[in-house]
Image: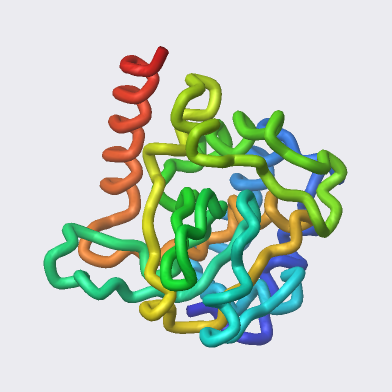
Length: 213
């Protein structure tokens, strides 16, 4: 883990080319982040001062219901022994909260950086506030993203999380910092290397794009 005194988000914010996120700006940002931060890994706690809200484990269950918000937390699945791999620090865009014990969302860590940006910016038409104010969210309901070729990339990394298996506070990231969250190294894959998992996701995307109407 990174040293506590280093605030990577403030560093990344200084690198931003524009207040308005775009694929080209974020690619440039990603390169600068790799050069500056190297192989450091950061925990979800790094977003404490950059979140709209920070939930405790008991608060999370009844409160998180808004589709299209970005959240992050530490996670340890119940079926970890049989899973081929999992991300212990997911970064997700909420798609559905079917009940107080379950959150379904797109984990952006499963994508390579190129596909992460393709997926994130493909959903821009679904954004409620393109100035990225505090209330901004994506209207990414399952029926919308699963039935449109434009948004279907997001299905490749759709995951279910059980709230009882969350192992930290839950950070609802302020939309102002979404671009930063895309390039900040917080993924923590267990059992497989991230590039192997992301290659598998790329294959899923190609299959979805080939089969979708």
